[in-house]
Length: 450
Image 1 (cartoon, one colour):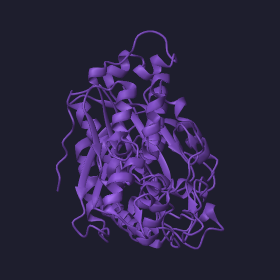
Image 2 (cartoon, helix red, strand yellow):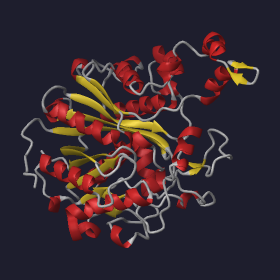
Image 3 (cartoon, one colour):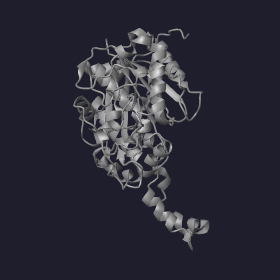
Image 4 (cartoon, helix red, strand yellow):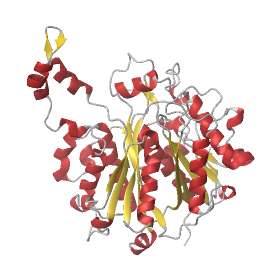
């Protein structure tokens, strides 16, 4: 039994939300889309997916990178993989939403006056996944290394490599998401990259919470981004047996979190970055405060690195640790921000984890599940979940959760389907975990009270 340990360090609040999802660019299109029960899942348009077992994906609307960086930085966007672009766009929307006067906002002429954040006290923790190489670019280089129908290492070294830009590798290193974000916004404090698969966002936000609480930073941009809408990303999920198949004619009904007839996830792309800030710093600049981060917990799944614990023990442990860290009891949780990718085993394990902590209260606790509308984008999914959970607390509103109307008997949770409902919750729990690797994380979020 973990004893409660109330955090007596600095209070940490959420002042900015930046998301890029299949429902739009920014937190407002995402929130409005969820309230209106819109679905962003549809046949992939970024490439010809007809050779794959399913052509569905959660693609973001088109956007231009020049809208998210200063004019003098636009050349650098040429060496940004899709994941990096998603992170930079999410960071811009988060910074703008928070009202921070960073280097980027000043250079773009979008704010007046001096900066309102000390760059030496401004950090970044960003979760990243497996960045897919640009296949046409790579294929052109590989083709030039052909010698009489076979691949030639000699020709690769002389001709193949020459067809790749000297900066090619910098497009695909996972730390480059944080690299570009910190340069654009002049974040000079610690910059960390978390690469723990689908758990990365929650872990990055939790680390930012810890860093600010202990006084090492005043502000931190944190969360994650990843695109699985590419041939390798989608094929990988299909080969692993995680992607839903046979529902291409019903994209809006394809992903069904926690439902009895759930059959897998829909690969997606997107990002979610939050601005966490020390309370006194936020108050000093007159910032809008969405919510307060109260506790963080993490754990490992020692059952198997490929499959989740059928009893959800690791998830339950992460939840209990987060509750203890925040000095919050299980009975005080009034909103659940579920992860729910829609896979048979992971949804079942997650539900078991909730049951182990909340018992018979599970069906009574209002709950969120957004992947039926957005799909699952790996390292960025958790931050999107957190952002929607924060918005629900801030607006006292629970948006509908698509395709959760027929839950399995053991997975009864408090989802709403038809229309938003009033939810004056004060304490929320949000969970994230890696589908492959076994990392689990949980955050306790509270409605802000002075």
